[in-house]
Amino acid sequence: MEIKKTPDGLEIPPPSPEDVVYQKQDGYAIIRINRPVVLNAMNKNVQRLLMSALEDAESDDSVGAIMLTGTGRAFSAGGDMYSHLYPDDDPAPGGIDVQMKIWSSIKPVVAVVKGYALGQGCELAAICDITIASEDARFGEIQIRQGSPPPVLITPFVVGIKHAKELLLLGDQIDANEALRMGLINKIISSDQDLEEYAISVITKLVNLPRSTVSLNKTLINRTYELAGFRDAIAYRDDENIGIMLDATDDDEETKEKRRLLREEGWGAFKAKRDGLYE
Image 1 (cartoon, rainbow, N blue to C red):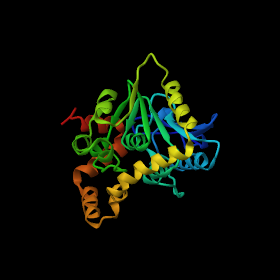
Image 2 (spheres, helix red, strand yellow; image 1 turned 120 degrees about the vertical axis):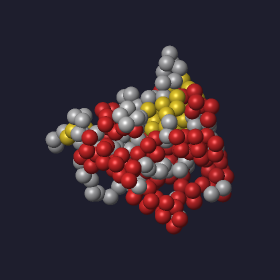
Image 3 (cartoon, one colour; image 1 turned 135 degrees about the vertical axis):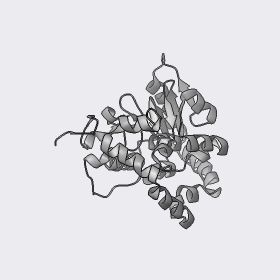
Image 4 (cartoon, rainbow, N blue to C red; image 1 turned 60 degrees about the vertical axis):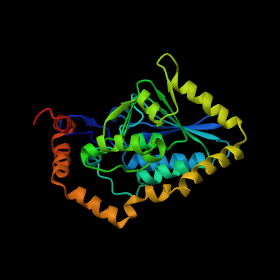
């Protein structure tokens, strides 16, 4: 398949069965988003492969826990802004489906984050049961800068109302220390330590504990949030009044211009305009 380019010349690799890699280890599984050239941006192919890998881990009795990470310099930079270069009309789970699979899994999922975890990637890391990050990790709910709402509304449940509004209304990126302060992650690993080695030590503890009780405790914690309306909040698109507001964002002229600029001129032009480098 021909490798296609963005309007500003960036080569985007075509979808591949290797876009997500599943590795079974002794007592646990590692799931890697494997599109390092585009910082593990997620498209329909990645969503299908992620769902399949999560289902494989869930159904395998020898797997007691799951590590979720990314190949290369990033965990995931979020949704693939150039998925239109390779049209994909085949059915695929959405971001909500994949993330709720993690939420509802009876097995603990540990996110291991290095580099960028932005947009949908930030939400994917946040919904995991434990999130461990390198000191160079960067997080952000940046969708507002493209005129879009968060795909999965996990952030308010993880960081609380004030921090959620800061992240979702401003769209700024934050470093690992700020993410830890807000409660978005559990642990920062310094550059002189091996990030995955530390994560494996945590996973080893999980798989050596009574599995039925680990599953029960995860279910009990999740149930607390579900009784507080977690599932209704995640399904905000089903609310008629919210739907009206969503339609209004699609009709907003500034949003249309941002999306046109991204589609026709590329990320560089979009970023320059977004950051006010030419007004």
